[in-house]
Image (cartoon, rainbow, N blue to C red; front, side, top):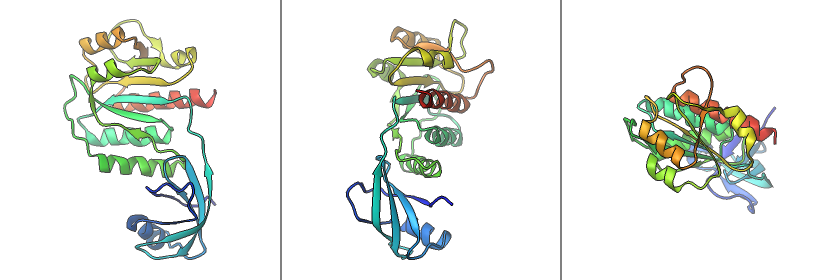
Length: 239
């Protein structure tokens, strides 16, 4: 049976012991009913996984000792999804959860012309990312950037393999095919409900973003984001 995973905000690379915060301590002791001598895995989101033993099963300050740490190399190439904030916050949160499970390295919220809501609750969204990282038993927590305006992001990005998925008429490459044509970091733009505006598409193309299709059906924004994450994860796994 797999050992339970827990997250710690403190780097654990060179530590011999760690103390879980109150929320994690309560989950370990009251929910999972772990006791002294039980083994767990700690992840710090920085590539370090530590096997340890509970030595003080306190529901407020659970102590873990005898840490044996392994450092996992960060998944390469870098995979970035820049997606508009959504009117339905739950749908955006679902996208973040699934993109984390697929191992994306960076998630960039965008404010586009048709973005209707710009609420951004970092603490809650970070909790979603942490939960998804632990559930999928990964060592790295994806970077969650602050929201940025679409035009500013397009102008500033320096990633070589850059794509924009949209539903407007025009010639597009299949995203799965386009991923095979270049090495290195990958970035894809996903728009809001109602898609990118004509000006945004034109601006992205002027900054060397390749228009791509994610399939023959019209997808919701969050579905498109998850489809893109799946395709990039599969391509990365095959390299």
